[in-house]
Amino acid sequence: MFTNRRPLLTVSVVIILLLMATTSFAWADPKYKLGTAKGNGTLKVGSQEFKVTSVVIKLLENSKVEINLISEIGQIFVSGTWSRSTNENEINIQITSGATSSFEGSGKLMVRDRKTIDRLNLQGTSRATKLAVEVNFVAETS
Image 1 (cartoon, rainbow, N blue to C red):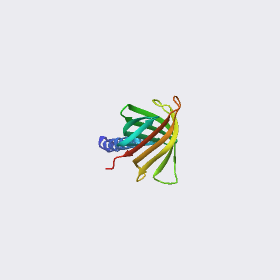
Image 2: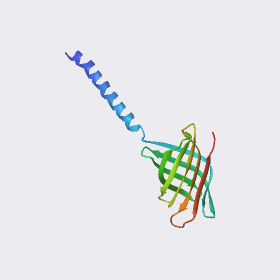
Image 3: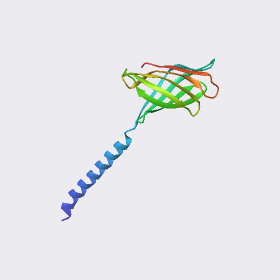
Image 4: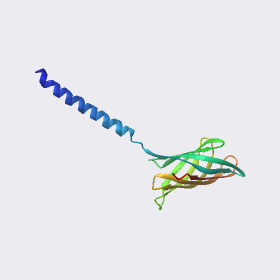
């Protein structure tokens, strides 16, 4: 009698482990696309210019975008919305607010192979100082 229960127990344990693995992989599936790139760029605010060395861009499923610019003056976070362009390697960005910068504007994210950051260009105006703000970044090619 005990010999018949052991295979049943083993099969039950295997099924439970498979279900748990399937669930954890589903949870690990992100609801966004994250891109990072090192490269060279500039952040211009009025007549001042700062070096940008890296960008981190998160495109969320709900058409929201979060952009972190790593520059010589620290990290600058901006957020807004994104939309697809007619060009498959181009993403339109509309900047609406930022935690460490308060500017509104628009621009484009250019990607290589629909998944690797190539360039980021943003133009806008600071809400606080009314100065022109411009970001131009080109990623290193590997």
